[in-house]
Length: 223
Image (cartoon, rainbow, N blue to C red; front, top):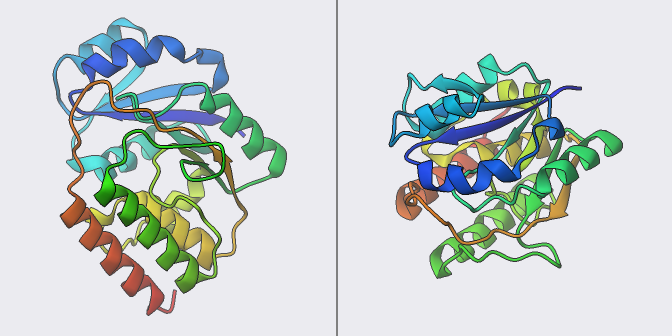
């Protein structure tokens, strides 16, 4: 199964210059960058020889849609280039995914041996709360439902395309869908370092509301 490393970007030039040289290109079959129109990130990625798409839609979910449609991989590994994602976890995720026959493997910040240096009180509580809600509502056993750094079969994306609230993002939706479909999901401990560049684009209030609505709508839906 081929793996595409999908990297959505928006004003990530500072982080890209530090993080991308740490990624060995032979870890995956393809590195695909989807740039939302930003601060020289697109030009830098092209200069370094990466495959780059100029995003036509808006938002992170839009970047995922365009990236998945263009990816050659049967599996997608999503990665943040702002310093939050650890490059060394890429081969670990790929290995576990292949060896265990998983549908999705998540780099959990909350498994023993891992930590988040980027969390504040609000985001840490939100992740704990939403993870607990998803586990209870859908009979799952996740420790981290919101982390971007994960690998998943491409068809999970298409099974999740009817997501109820786009502002929720795809990470909790993937977790809900995988639980409802009883897919095989694994986790590995993965640190989340502090951001080294760029700014947080997620709104705790708006995204949190979207996640809550998605959980409720999925819980009461028949599909």
